[in-house]
Length: 315
Image (cartoon, rainbow, N blue to C red):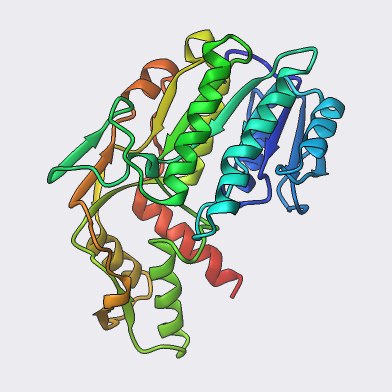
């Protein structure tokens, strides 16, 4: 439970995968903010007291929205997570965040801002088994990973110069109901469903011998809210949000097939293989636990079961 109370929380990117779960978490929280305002380029279906249409790449729209909403807390989720459009990635992940922070700094009451990055900022680390802490060098090579690093560094300037209280987070592999179908394990589950429904004969995969840190989206948003409620020691810091548990991707694939209750052929697809895959990467969330007491509560197998049930209901 948050140790501080918020009158108004603004959530950017509220219509997305994580945003919907965050709105649900805030709406149910015992320390619920007095007013939850969702911002996105389109209206979503998550619970919020207000929905505001706002293009975060438009400085005038952002400034106008924040002036009207007057939040005392902002959780900035809006961003591009994939694709090779360098201009769009920079505009949405870096420049939009810069405009948001600039507009927030002009408000009469300085809001605390939580800026959401990604474990992609670490890039391809070295070694067979990597436990990654926040002090690990940021070696991202993708447009997404690099843009999130630039976003974070710019945001931390506001904290370092005491302009705004800013917290940055780097979530690891987020899973759970509503996960985009292009990502593991959602891509496995969608392929399994296609076989069950007679639309495919096999599941295709890339390298499944790696181990990754998967964290349920509902645990992730709980961590975000716990940090928003933390005392001033959290300001200006960066926090991993991770389970700390290495999960073998082949075990996750087997569990996905197991949910179908039948045997399904699996074939490795060369098109799905990456040029470089570190065998094991796990996030160290000790700093987050020390500041908030947060621990993940949803095992990855439960996440898979909930995902399977969710999209089979909506098929």
